[in-house]
Length: 64
Ligand code: SF4
Image (cartoon, rainbow, N blue to C red; front, top):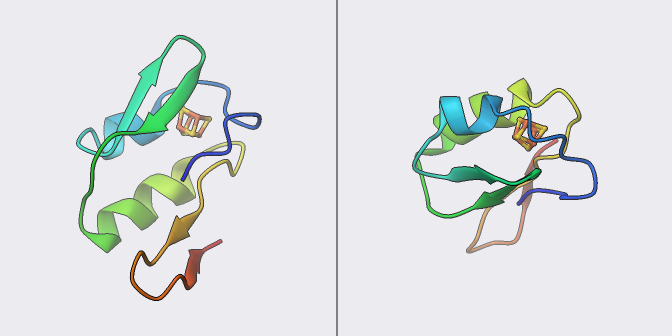
């Protein structure tokens, strides 16, 4: 998920995981799914740490 109050729409997440993130206007939103390793790469690249990765089934927070 993306904390839209922290997102500065700089676009790294969309570039690294285009099936998941869509930057529109001044925020990124989650629009799809991708393998976990790709999600983690995108989340770690976010300059404002706006991305949280959570396992949908268990609810476990995987990042940060
Ligand atoms: S990388 Fe972070 S700051 Fe940049 S668009 Fe994605 S969520 Fe927003």
